[in-house]
Image (cartoon, rainbow, N blue to C red; front, side, top):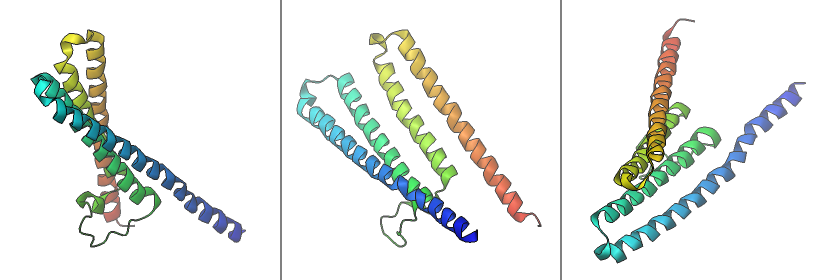
Length: 175
């Protein structure tokens, strides 16, 4: 019976590798964002003289948005792989991200929530710049969605802090 349980546990532990193709897919998605960034940058550079200040600002905000989404992808790809699939052998690597040394599922969730707030903020700023051309209900819903991201991020951070504090207190308690 122990042999069967050991094999089952090994298989369950091995199943984490099924996530590896998902991370490779996110890398491909990041390539799409690189293409989009370069396309928007080419438009900005080639048409800058014929664009108004508002149009330039909207294109630059679009570029920032793409970069923030790419940063989010990197956090999910690297942090998720490290947390859920396998450790990355990056010890003493000069390019190892600082945040990777203390990443866990809780930290990753807080970082992702913060990144989503940043991305949402960029979209909201674009909406406010174009407020005259948008229906009030669109603006209302974008603000509501942004506020829900903020509330969710605070709740995630608060929950993570409670869990971290509880774990720290439990580890100090006599057994």
